[in-house]
Amino acid sequence: MAAIKELAATVRSGTGKGAARSVRRENRVPGVIYGGGEAAQPISLDFKTLNTLIYAGHFLTTIFEIDMGGRKERVIPRDYQLDVVKDTPLHVDFLRLKAGSSLRVEVPVHFINQEISPGLKKGGTLNIVRHTIPMRVPADAIPDAITIDLATMDINTSVHISAITLPEGCKPLVHERDFTIMTLAPPLTYKEEAPVAAAAAAAPAAGGKAPAAAAGKAPAAAAKPAAKK
Image (cartoon, rainbow, N blue to C red; front, side):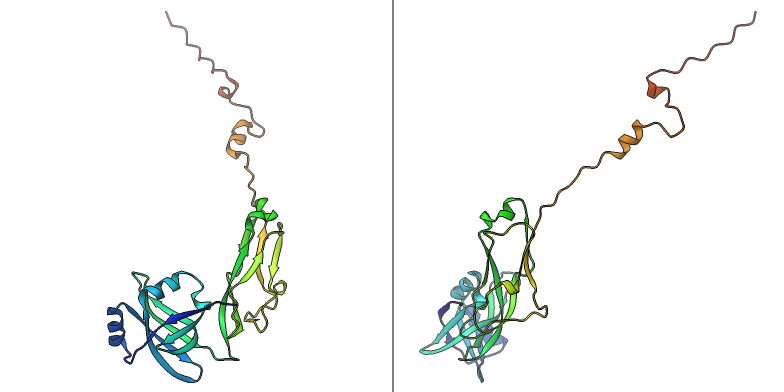
C-alpha cells in the first residue's frame, strides 16, 4: 500500500494567474484540492518541500494528509505542472480521498534480483513491455508498485498479469485479458559473412582462362621486324 505522508499547506483565497504569480513570489507553489462532492479548495505549499517530494519518486501514488492550519484532508496528487525551462513545480492538483471510493492510478512495475537471474547471466535481455499498469484501486489501499522477482527466471520466460497476485479490490484497466508485462529474450548472435568480393576475385571466370598476370607470368615481348638493307 502507498505510504501516507503529512504535508503542511496554507489556504489561499485568490485564484487566477495574478494570484498564482503572487504566491510564487513568496517562494510557495499554488495548488488546489478538489473532488469528493465538495467545493474546490485553493491552497499553497512550500516550494522546497514540494520540489523534493516530486523528485523523490512515487509522488502520484503517494497519499498525503494535508494539514491546513488544523483542518486535515486526505488526498492524492493527480497532476502537477513544471516550469518548461527550470523543471521546478508551478502548480499541483490534489484529489480528495473519501472512505469507500476508488480511483484510477498508474501503478509502476519494479524488478528485483536481476543480478542472480539465470537468464540474464547467460546474456539474455529483459524486455519490459509495461513500465506501469493502469488500475482501478480502492482510495484507502493504493498499491505502491507491482514487484516481479527475476531470481529464478531463465531465457524465454515471460510474465503475464494472470501470474501477479494483485491487492484486494485492484483491477487492471487494460483491454487485453492476459497482457504481457515482461519477457526474458535470448541473446542476439551475429555471424560474419565471408567477403564475397574476395571470393569472386580468387575464382576464375566460368568457361575462361585465368589472366597471365594472375598466373605470375609476364606477357612475352613482341618480336621486332628485321631491318632492311
